[in-house]
Image 1 (cartoon, helix red, strand yellow):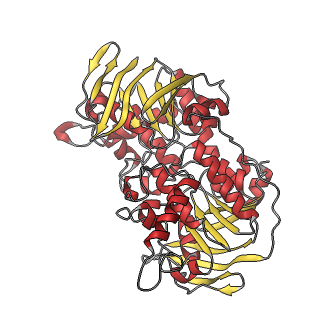
Image 2: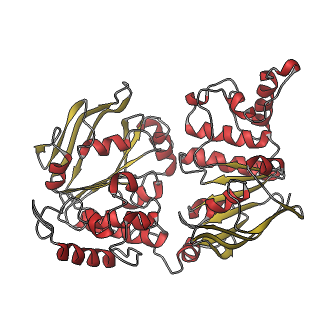
Image 3: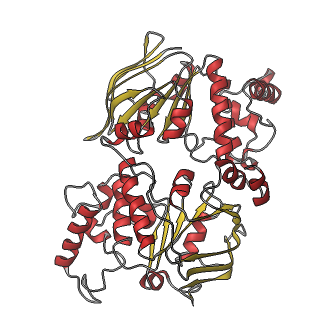
Length: 506
């Protein structure tokens, strides 16, 4: 099936998310849509899938114009989509999820569970998507849940499959398996639109690459294009992709964690007997698939969650039961993974957000008043230093793009003397050019003697920045590896294998 998008434009009020985009996907082709977060990739695919109505333009399937009033119309036209955040019902089985919304029935309108299981088994075998049709989805790891999403689309006879950031929650081994599945689908004539911002994966799997920047198509490239060429297309200028840093010169232990446990109010073990040390002048990275206790670990360090047991020390002093405000006051910087909910106050100005944790300290103010002149001066300097794209530092933080919101958080936390920097997902939603800047700032912080506890789900980022790496799985630091270890070693640990297993894979 041949798919064409002609002049697709999508506006939200005065904001143009897609600007006259043309795209052609040939039958049996893997067409990569490359661009940074916020470039307009997902919006374009939501238009194609019938979730958004285009402001202008048309969708052509096999030469016939189409109008989709919803995903059902898109599916009937042969278009399927696997969303970045899975659309599955956890308490239903695989077979029940696959037929949900397009139920198989027998006499008297009864559900035909047997047929649903047969469909899952047949498609699983044909496309090497090994899934047990009778297992509850909530009992499956994320990599297998993604297979269920693909099976849902194939069961509805999708001829064009949209994969939106499909590797975001996968281990390296799961990513390799997904690419094998994509090649199998391609060989069977299925076209795939592969949405990503990861240059290595796009180059490994795509037949052709379309690059989107700020809502517009800025170029097409062959997969033989170099990462530097693709990165330059994405951001509009040359970019240094490799992290340039000298070997670390670690000092004394700055952060000490011993036997840390965090248990949720419902009794779920979130952090399970974690012990680690981070020395002054080094970057200790915590790698792992999202949702394995990394968030709770960092929140415990900065006093946002109370440990059930264990101790946390900063520069030799116990801070286990210390308030967040006092921890920050002792020289800890904190960049949370969810900048909008935990890092910023959206209704406050950029200038106000830049002094959230120092507004009552000189020169910005005291217990009774604020020095607005100094707050404005600080904002002007930080906006320029961190290249925050805004018309005014008095604009509300909520008006900024995700990447610029991240820059505001980074500017606030990295513009004061620190003993420890706790930083989660530092470049999530930040363009490739800004990633280069952020990475340099993190390394510079390390070189000033700051201890850095880094959490990232981007393995390339971990390898590029870390001096030591701990891999977290099911709440535990399951093993430590040097950043020079192979992707296979990291992948085994991320999937819950032992450190011994990981070393044997190298």
